[in-house]
Image (cartoon, rainbow, N blue to C red; front, side, top):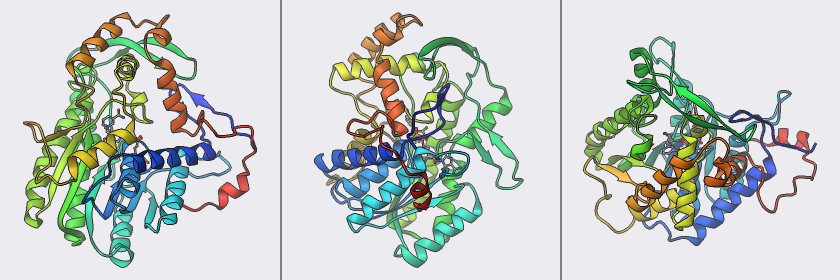
Length: 400
Ligand SMILES: NC(=O)c1ccc[n+]([C@@H]2O[C@H](COP(=O)([O-])OP(=O)(O)OC[C@H]3O[C@@H](n4cnc5c(N)ncnc54)[C@H](O)[C@@H]3O)[C@@H](O)[C@H]2O)c1
């Protein structure tokens, strides 16, 4: 079969396995050529390992100097009568293949990170085949639903404002158009549910269960990822439901840091840059900001994708020769520093003021935005022959 991209709104309905493989190889080649991670983690668990920041973390830690063995947990779909499967499914497989070629362990668990069964399987594996201990746990899940661990009822996150509604334009990738939309205000229940899904509760429960199972090594670190963003995005993000959840995540980081101090460990939240990922394209009225940001940061030579961000995070902030991880006055790692540079933001503000439905592709970096989105799903990667037939039966033989 020849695979052509199918996009509905801002959701990719299929993926190109050959392109996913190429994207993994490109990221590996990038980190191998960069300033290496020194004294990095050797045994790492990544929750949310199949795409975006979690996948980039895994590639950076395995190939960017630390040569880490990794366990990745993700929720992805393989090929079936319903379709080709998700990009994350193939990312897991091709990452594992490349890591094994280097003699590294790369174990994939494809399942629900919230379920007790997944936790049990991961812990059993750490004890029986992974050497018994972890020295880094990365929490990079992005999802819209989480079951209540006690009742099993589903909490659903809402991407809404708190206080006043906000009206602004949003990109539709399927039609290459910008549409005006209003982001409504959240109820108290919606704010609470979003905090349950995207706050720190589940991160804390993973650390708790791993600690009880005695699989956290002395000095073990844990990291989760956050976003704060520029003032122009506050009404939609930082002061909205997602921002409220991230405030909870930051507080959880402090709580876990105290807990891990007993074993000489640390917990940190790294605040990352706004980027096109499967999760972020969902955020309504946020795309004009990314279009402007990409344009300005590329012009200034400051643009980074997930892999550049993660290699800088591990090589220059988390590991290395320094005695402590550099943080701001809230104890947050700020790898969003280039995004929030005053010179960048003043240019971004000027561009956002100009972006409109009839000019967004010229004024902002829509080409970059769309290419990133397509490449996340294995399409539009230079060097890949998209006219070549892909053998569906062979894909079905691939194991995570
Ligand atoms: N994209 C951005 O611009 C941005 C910026 C700063 C911080 N962040 C943060 O980074 C983190 C990761 O986001 P991303 O943009 O890389 O997302 P992503 O959608 O690319 O990746 C999410 C990962 O979570 C996994 N996942 C989702 N539900 C799961 C479940 N129930 N069980 C197991 N795995 C599950 C997916 O399989 C995938 O591996 C989030 O906390 C996000 O808020 C993102």
